[in-house]
Amino acid sequence: MKDFENIIGYESVKKELRQISDVLKNKEFYEKLGVRAPRGLLLYGEPGVGKSLMANSVIKASGRKAFVCRKDKPNGEFVNEIKKTFNAAAEAAPSIVFLDDMDKFANGDEEYPDAEEYVTVQSCIDEVKDKEVFVVATANRISALPESLMRVGRFDRTIKIFNPRGEDAKKIIEFYLKKTKCADGLDAAEISRLMHGKSCAELETVINEAGIFAGFERSDIITMAHFLKAYLHTIYKVQIDNLLNNELNVSLAGGRDLMTNIIYHEAGHTTVREVLMPGSVMLVTAYGCFGEPGGITMFYDTDETVIEDAYSKIIGGLGGCAATELKFGLRDMGSSGDFDKVFDVVKELITHDCTSGFSIHSCGWRDSELLKYDQEKTVATEVERYFMKAKEIIAANTELFEAIAHALAKKGILTFEDIQKIKEECRIVHIAV
Image (cartoon, rainbow, N blue to C red; front, side, top):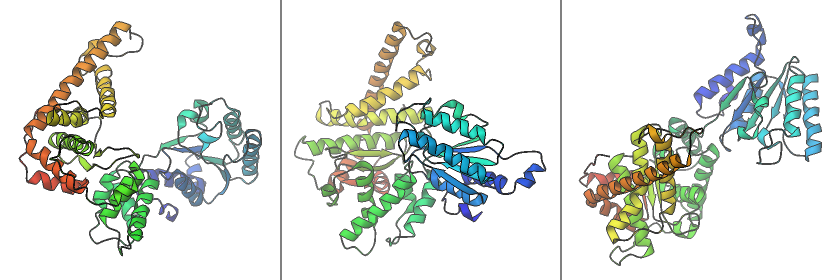
């Protein structure tokens, strides 16, 4: 079906959408088998992943007339608008009702599952049940919707649309790059690694922003440097004034100033992750993010369900503070965010995955104050152990650590390729976790 060609990637999702569209368009083949079309389709996921595009593709492929309902009126008027939409669809059956951003129908982002709007949608779906009216809905957060509305019989098909990853992200990036004038050899695979898990809208915006940076510099082509600037500016809100300078050229011989601390902090994250999980660091920068001084080390997590990956994430997260303590003999005061994330991951491993034994497993019904005390004490002890492991890894790989720090001090940004080249010239000492 050509109506799905505008959806790049998402092959398994498109296959299911094609099936639904075929049932709606060619119902006689299915009626011979004694089956009916599904009554509704709910597509949900983060904003910008293409849910509305997919819904419209289903509508076009089905050949049915569609009646669209979006929240564009005050609450009382909107309830009447929902009823009018379903009534019009019933009169034009076979037809489709498209409920776009259904989780926004009531009270913005707050959760009101018993709101009049949802009750109305639910009753309208029931009223057109036998009138060949198919309902397509999109939502960002299904937690805002009542379970009774989402149940089978009202929405027979519910599909979560994830942010594009891996090959899907690469295909989308290649599609957008074809529309731009890019330098030869601009690597879609490297860009997709950086954009791993970002929405389709973010992918498109970053590439467009790269073109804006190139145009402002009066460059004839878009380069990887332009893309990196656009990526950091769009995703991490790095200040444009900083981005316009390709090189930091910071001297690391002047003591522990703020920028030197940031550089060694990020070098610590990078060193630990690359020793524990080679090839997992996609980008590291010493530019400030979100308008504040600081740096970014971006990791590529392939499988968060593997326990070794969790340990690498924990120890890597502590690598920044471990590095500055080793280098300067003082605890890094800018590591609170790292600690918060690490404590959350360790607590999850201990209380739910029983990595420190079954006696402190969290069951809800038996979570006494004594159990919580034991859990908190165990978490703190484990984080301390992981912190010492991070220091051990950096101490054993001082050559790599210093090489990354000095390269970062000079360039400000290190890509996956930059880091791999540095590693080729350094001896790597692997430490058991």
